[in-house]
Structures are given as C-alpha cells and as structure tokens.
Length: 506
Image 1 (tube, rainbow, N blue to C red):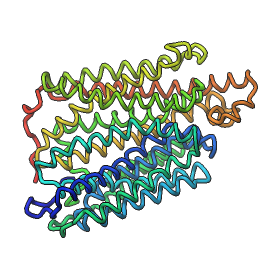
Image 2 (spheres, rainbow, N blue to C red; image 1 turned 60 degrees about the vertical axis):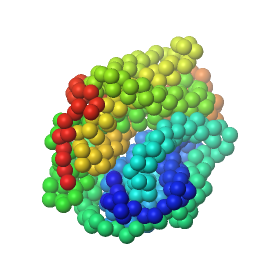
Image 3 (cartoon, rainbow, N blue to C red; image 1 turned 30 degrees about the vertical axis):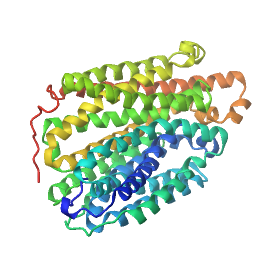
C-alpha cells in the first residue's frame, strides 16, 4: 500500500538514516519471505520426527492463509495507528511464532504455530514497503526498488539450500529459530532510525469482512485437507463456507473501504491478472511442497539434492522474469505470456509423465536429475507469465495501483493456499485408496531409520504406492498449469506503455 503522506509531510531522514532504514526493511522482508521456502526441504525430516504426514499440506496452507487475509488489514491499521507500532506488533508476533514452531511437539501444534507465524507475517510486506515509501523521496524511491525486488529472489534461492544444509548438519528446529536474531536486529534498527510523523488520513477497517473471508476459506481448506476423514460431512461444510463467502461479498459492497475493491474485478485486464495469479500461486506451492517429498521419499535422494532442485526452480523464475521483460518491451504482453505458457506446460508435463515411470528406471533418466530440468522450465514459465500479468495490471489500474497490487498478491497467496490444500487432498485420498492397510507409508519413507528396518519387498511396495500417489498430485499440477497457461492468451495484445488506463479510482 502506498504511503498517504504528501512530499512535504515526509519525515526528516538524513542519507545515512535512510540507508539504515532500508536495510532494516530488507532484513524484515527477507525473514518473512525465506520462511515460505526454507521449510520445504525440511518437511520430510520434520514429518519423520513429529509424524502426522497427512497434515503436511496444512503446514504450508496455515501460514499462507493467515498471511494473505491479514495483509490488507495491516495495511489499513498502519494508516490508522502508525507504521511503527503495527509493524512491531505483527513482526513481533511472527518471531514468537518462529520460536514456537521450533518447540512444536506434534505436527498439529506445528500447524497451529505456523498459523501464528502467518498472522504476524501479514504485517511485514505492506508496512515495510510503506515505510520505504515514507522515508525516501520519489526519485530515490525508484533507485531502491531493485534492492527490494532482489530480496524476494534471494530468499527464494537461498531458502531451499539453507534448509537442506541446516537439516543435514544440525536440528530442524534451527529452520525456524535462525530468523529470530536477524528479525530482532531489524526491529532495533527501525526503532532507532525510523522517524514517524503523525497519521493525517483516516481509514476504516473492514473487520467483519476479514472474519467472514477467513472463516469461509478455512472451511473449504478443512473440507479439502481432511476429506478422507470427514467423508460426506464435507458437503455441508463446503455449503456453509460458500454461504459465508456470499456474506463476505455482501459485506464488501457495503464497506467504505473493502478488502477487495469491486472496481478491480470489472476490468478484463485486472480480472485476467488476478485469475492467472491464482494458478501461479497453486503451481508455485505445489512444486515447493511436493517435489522434495518425491525426490527424498521415492527417489531416495539426500536432502541436499532436494534443496538444490528447489534452488534451480527459484533461480529460473527471476532469470526468466529478466529475459521476458526485454521480450515484452519489443513485442506485446500477450506474446511474452504465451512464451512463458509454453515453458510452463512443458515442465509440468515432464514432471507428471516421468513420475509415472518406475523409480528404478527414473533414477537412470538424466542420472536422476530430471526433476531439476522439469522445475527449471516450470519456474521459467511462471516468471515469464508473471511479468506481463504484473505490469499490465499496474498500467491499467492508475491511481488504484497500490490496492490492485495488494489484491494481486492476495490472489496468488489464495491460489497457493487452495492449491496446496487440493494437492494434499489428492495425495491423502490416493494413499488411502492404494494402500488402506498400510499406516502412513509416506512417513515411513521419510524416516531413514524406519526405512532401513522395512524388508526389501515391502519397501518396494511402499515406494510404488507413494510414487503413484505423488504422480496423481503432479498430474493435477499439470492441469492447473494448463489452465494458467490459457489465461496468458487473454492478456492485452499491446506493448507496455500503450495500454489504456482503465481504472481511475480515487
């Protein structure tokens, strides 16, 4: 959310203070961003220790759900009560969640603590970006944007390998605890160097809308992730969630400042961007959550290999974004997006097809490195599609650009949340149908000690069952990727700078 200050109301910060505030914001953004990727390669080890493999998807979904819903709330609160106190509350809650996650005795408690993390993390991105907007004049603000953008890329690249390194050489608890010292340093720097002026614009907070949206999404997630246990009870649960969502939409129409402004859904450019980002989020989290499980559990590769494969995925996204931006300037939004769609479909089909091949043959294909090749193309495709989605949205939104950007981010997180839930449901139902007599076969493969005690014939059965179930997951990812690719054909066929500004809100 953009700052509400006019230039004459910017707080006084010298050049040195501005740099220190910027680095404090970057540190805060890094800690929240890396939390989404560092956990991925550690999850097989964590489930082996805590049990409860069926709750794997909840570990990701709980964090993303609470973070996505609270982002617009914290943005409003920062305008009402001030940046500092809101960021300190949210970021402090995030750090408390980090500490609690490391002490989680069971998988269920880890899910609860991850939800606490997410509630706090929702404050980090909107408030830190607003602080940067408050601190830097417009000319300097443009110069520091690359540093902020590189923070997300760095977190996504470092996260998987750092998680794998910590798990292999230390305790998985450090996955959550290493963030705490860096976060405390960031808070201390902001406390000393960021000088805040009083708020001059009043805003209202749509608390009822936020509660209805949270309850609606949670109900659907519960139905999806626990479908194998709830049975037919998922039908009334989904019906009740849909009712809550319609109440949320009604509340949005009456709200003076809705969480998701209706204007952003009436324009075709913004609608395509928002719908496409749902697919981007679903594919992104699907690859992040389930490829490491396949690599470690089915292919029996070390955790560092799984981390390296996710690093390839994280690297290909920003690399492709840079290339696609140059292509887009010389062609059109649609041409660039279709180019990315081709890579996305290719990579997702490679994962889905090769996952159906028996593991013994699988390890012979490209020396067992085929998942890295596949996720490279998936990441490159997502990066190439995301760039025209993002730029066309900002060009069409004009004065509602800040809210439109926040909505786009919310839709991606919602896509990641629902995508993880859907894929977790597919995995749990597949395991239950293929091996109802085997208790938690995936967790047995994740735990090296348990795996070594299983007779060879039974171990082969476990590998086959888990591999076939994950193959179903990858086919669903491929289908979502196909739907996402289709949206690329609906992006405006114009060059950047030539798209008519459709939305001109206040």
